[in-house]
Image (cartoon, rainbow, N blue to C red; front, top):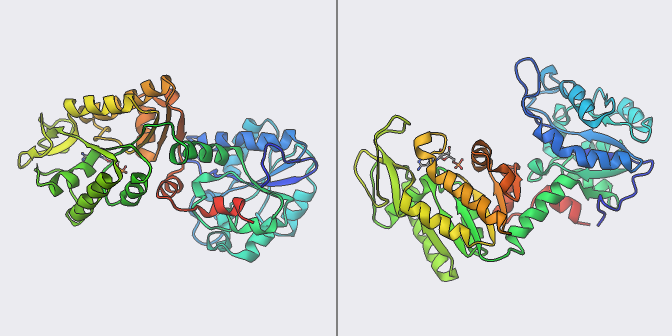
Length: 397
Ligand code: AMP
């Protein structure tokens, strides 16, 4: 398999699939350029290696063909400033004119193709469309982990046209390396903290993790489905009654596999879903009618801390309370701090999934964790143990 480290880009037009799906304000100004910055190492590597990056991305959700508000033209100025050369913009992503623009690129010159999703063939994974994209370059670099769970033309299908000239970009490579440090070769003990609102969205991940982790801390709203399944009183707390059996099954599997499942023993309960609510600390299975558990209590927090503190590897997905409200943020802050402390002592930590990333950023822990994945759906599918089409396409023959 080729790697971006050793591939010779001299004189090559390198098609780089990136994720430039950045947010814009009403004046079409980029409000968060993290995704563009994340692709810069790969773009620069091609440039300094004597090649010409041809950048491809989707942007927004155009419905039927080209729409100015989803044009890449809104990104080209900012991209030029970041890359340090004037990036050219193609009028489309396929066709003769685009192909000629690609051919005319000199080493170090950069071309941004127009939005891939202006063509239906992209999301359909159409082979003919993929072939036309492939016609624009000499090699294919997949650096869009955020769309790696999709078998789209540019994220997977076009790999077949570059059997000897396909590779991951730096961003995907570091995502996969970090995930493998957790899922394949963790320093033990390995602790996963799964939180968030609902257990239904996390069952497959939890089941997959049960075969790998030593400790599984379950927090947030999903706790109460487990507590109720055990016969506890949960008041008005979030609960998915149709998953009570599943909760019991997960606990049974954990027991069989020797996984230590840890759930809040006490909670901060509130009489309304509001930061102005009255609150009290009570046992997780003794929440009075009309009250709801919105955060882990002090006894639970102390135990979570202890377990995280002794861990060699930590995976965090989902807050353990309603961290958006100050009154119910203590549990998630304590988890974040414990992860930072364990990391500073040599542990490896990976935080992923929208809300835990927001939490880590909001409370200033981002510098103290080993890796933050912003991949969303692709990350969740990887944690479920599924093979991602965009990864398989690069690795496969
Ligand atoms: P998810 O997208 O499933 O990871 O859920 C994240 C959301 O779960 C956050 O917005 C939290 O506010 C929410 N959450 C965490 N704990 C609770 C809880 N005990 N009750 C209700 N919502 C919660």
